[in-house]
Amino acid sequence: MAFFFFALSIFLYLGFEFPEGYPAPAAAAQEGVKITYGSVIKLMHERTKFRLHSHDVPYGSGSGQQSVTGFPNVDDSNSYWIVKSAPDSSARQGDVIPNGTIIRLQHMRTRKWLHSHLHASPISGNLEVSCFGRDGQSDTGDLWRLEIEGSGKTWRQDQKIRLRHVDTGGYLHSHDKKYSRIAGGQQEVCGVRDKRPDNVWLATEGVYLPINASK
Ligand SMILES: *[C@@H]1O[C@H](CO)[C@@H](O)[C@H](O)[C@H]1NC(C)=O
Image 1: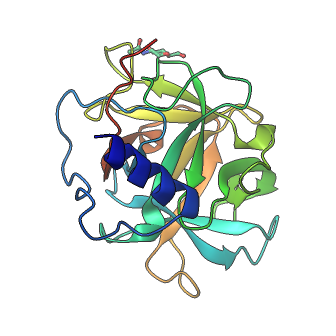
Image 2 (image 1 turned 180 degrees about the horizontal axis):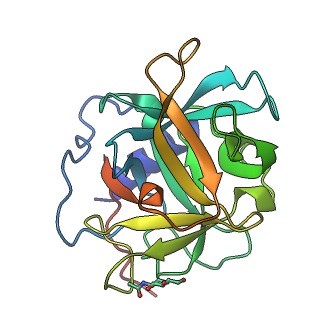
């Protein structure tokens, strides 16, 4: 067990791909599995089933920062995000995450943070969502409030959630507006201030760290 955590922390630190012998990422939503800090997850847009995705391609408009899209295929390592606490939080790796908590999502491959601001998104002109910053380099534009639908006080894998951007009030949103050129087949991800069905996401594939029992 200790070795497992050691291996995991090295893997998270260096941003490696899942190595040989590493437990395979869980494929399907398992009822009752809790999302904890340090877990590496994919987020599925509920309406379209596309995964929240980023890659080393800048937007050709707006901020020019690293683009964030919805990705149609399930198997792509550029769709993994590490669940992190806010910089001023005392939460630790393995802690569960109550409704209303402010969190950050770090893109595993590029180490940048899921970010938003007042720039216009490329297709629909809503709030642009980008990847920005780096380890140890994060600002308030990286903060998102967790809103759980239905019942349950802490975030579980089978729950629908919304992520509301703290600075702008925009919900993390996607829709079937597709890019045609550099990100062909991928769809726009943006921030939208109205609470709509298109703002709902589910945690799907990933490595879910066990709950930290010690307090
Ligand atoms: C989570 O908080 C939001 C408001 O921040 C509220 O609308 C929602 O009902 C809460 N969910 C649960 C499961 O309590």
